[in-house]
Image 1 (spheres, rainbow, N blue to C red):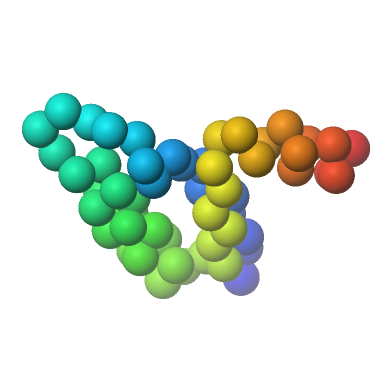
Image 2: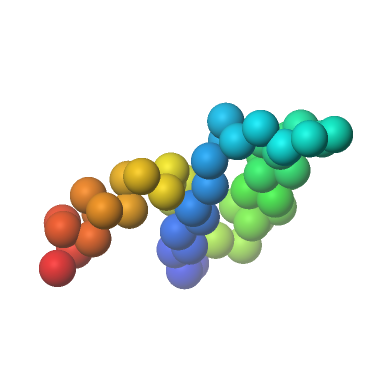
Length: 52
């Protein structure tokens, strides 16, 4: 099974909708076909240092 990195800010405030609900739905569907790692955009800097 392939691994997918999903980068999102679950606390992002979007006018007129619950942004985190969309991400929770998408990640639940992606988990059906992928090993999923969820990461906040701020953590990408740290992750990049680890992987390089």
